[in-house]
Image 1 (cartoon, rainbow, N blue to C red):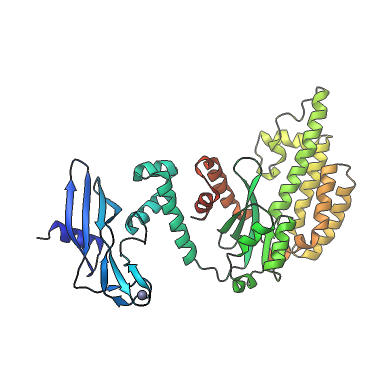
Image 2: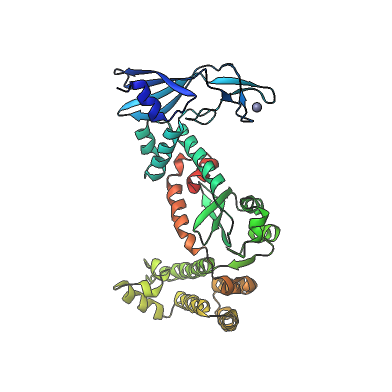
Amino acid sequence: METLSEHYCRLLGLGAVWRVVDVDLSLEAQRVVIRIEDVPSQLVCCPECSQQRPRKDHAAERSWRHLDTMQFETILTARIPRTECPECGVRTVAVPWAEPHGRFTLMFEAFATRLLQSASSFQKACVFLRLNWESAQRIMNKAVERGLRRRELDGVQHVGLDEKSFGKGQSYISIITEIDGGRVLEVASGRDEQAANELWETLSWEQKEHVEAVAMDMWQAYENSVDAHAPEAEIVHDRFHISKHSNEAVDKVRRAEHKQLKQAGDETLTGNRQLWLFYPENLKDPNWLKFSELKDAELKTSKAWAIKEQFRWFWEYRIARGAETFFMKWHRWASRCQLKPIQKVAEMIHGGLDNILSWFNHRISNGPAEGFHSLIQALKSAARGFRNFENYRTRILC
Ligand SMILES: [Zn+2]
């Protein structure tokens, strides 16, 4: 019959150089300690040049936490041989079960990563794994770095640059996404040109040359970064951001008007802020009834809303020329409406029109990235736990 040592040796997949010499099972401590040794007759390799070299001595004993055996915490211990390499000097041999300097086995890290990624609460996963927060975060950071090194970035054609506020106050992060693949490629702290440049570093120059278009808000710092890193790429001020600005403008008009009306005791605009932000076709009774009355009323807000709503036709054109003609008419209407926020948006769109019309060539938007936005939102609400930006980055990229 197989001995316990042989059994563990096979389970760990140790190969010829290593053997399990002892399995110490402590019922009281609920712990299994597996002692591993190198087989003296087997040659070892220098970890740097991979050449077979003689042993010099053994490093001090170390231990690694492994996957539990049933409910028993399981620890591997070993003294790792050191080689004396004529080229590289004295080096500690690499072990098959862990990374250099790791405190956990690779199998444990793989399991912990899966669990930490899929658990709704990082904290609960830590409790389940009996890991403290720092160790869990370190395991995640390593897994993400490995994933980033392995991923394929050739063929990225459409990217999105976007910002998101982070933590307390006005601190921002910048995000670069691959729009077609629907994945976040990198995040950087801040939303200035330097942050955007850091994001671009994710791609090699060859890969950057391949990028055809970049979806983004009208933000000079990001535009500059495109000029510097992907000068051939077209900038697309996308639908997602334009509609955000227009909605904000309608809301500004509504707020000012609401204040005025309220002072005169008129509650027409009380409690219907959200209704103005929905697409009307998405409204259901009784909201639709309520809203159709409001939108037809003699209100500044209704007028602002109607102008904004009209602009949606812009995106329905098949080619840029048609959309441009439509825009010119819309712009005349919007600039005469005497509602400052709407006029401002009209001017903004007018100023960036070339990079909005480019949408008709690429039809990309940061909209599809909304999945990321909700992910980031969820992480933000859990942000108490992120003690630094690096940890936050890991959780977005994992
Ligand atoms: Zn060597």
